[in-house]
Amino acid sequence: MKLNTLMPKALEAFYNLELSNAEAAFKMKHYQQSWRHLERAHILGQPYPIAHSMVHWRMLLFGIKTKNISEIIGQIPRLLFGGVKSFVGKIPVGNTGGANVPPLKPMDIPDDLIQIINNYK
Image (cartoon, rainbow, N blue to C red; front, side):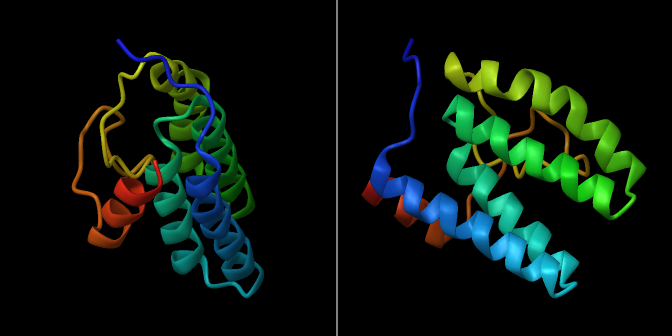
């Protein structure tokens, strides 16, 4: 069993770009676009406990700011347990992290993210 800790620096740049893009889109009130960037950051950060938990924190804040009760409720257990699952390497690969998808369901990873993950992990 592999214990994951910190995200590789090269991959972290792409993760941070997604978070920045999410914030910029939110400020322009492009909420769907903002959410897509959070999902992409989740896919990139999911194997790493701190990055994974940070995305769920951002998703929780998104739910609060948009007054989305189901997202708020759905993010609380993900925030509490997501990082632990990452630490022990037991994640549903490709899961986008939102309350609109089952928390343990593996999902397809977009081709561009597969390429980033494979090249920079």
